[in-house]
Image 1 (spheres, rainbow over the protein chains, first blue to last red):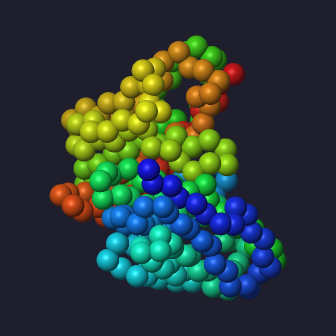
Image 2: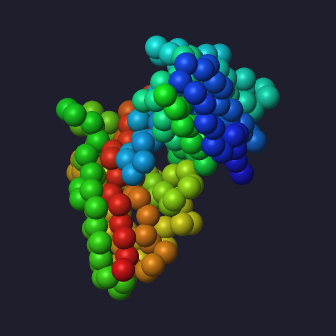
Length: 112
Length: 116
């Protein structure tokens, strides 16, 4: 059974810092991996989608990497801003099914 | 098309009552999913449709829950005889998928259900 773990559960940083959020999954046979952002009480906003054949994706200040063989992905946020404060969720989709399996998320707080 | 729409945004109901939520996916997306999220947890899969066919149901989907997607367009999720433990955010997502392909999910804003 696929399990997704995100470390750390919470992170507080001052504005301007670069930071890394970690995601690990137990079954490396994934189809793709998707990073989402969730603001309190809101739905999920897709940030980056990495297909299993890809190693990384970039969007603005965000960079996500994928290492299938080790079952790991990282989300790198450059020059963090207070507006980046949110919960970041990692999710994988397995080859055998179509449901996304989520981690519990990392709650990020960026102070000005 | 402005994305995935969910209605209502918030629902407060008494224990034992029935509730129904609606989801309108992105029009060209053939797949539609329902997830449930409780505080401090990631979303958990409930059920999935490809067009009008319900192809997968989680063991979390008890017999009090039923979902439909008539004509492969919008979907409804009904909870009968609500219980305290049903209080959660119910999220709908849609995607475009084909044989061996999945192009990522788009989520709606969710329906927050509170059972009193």
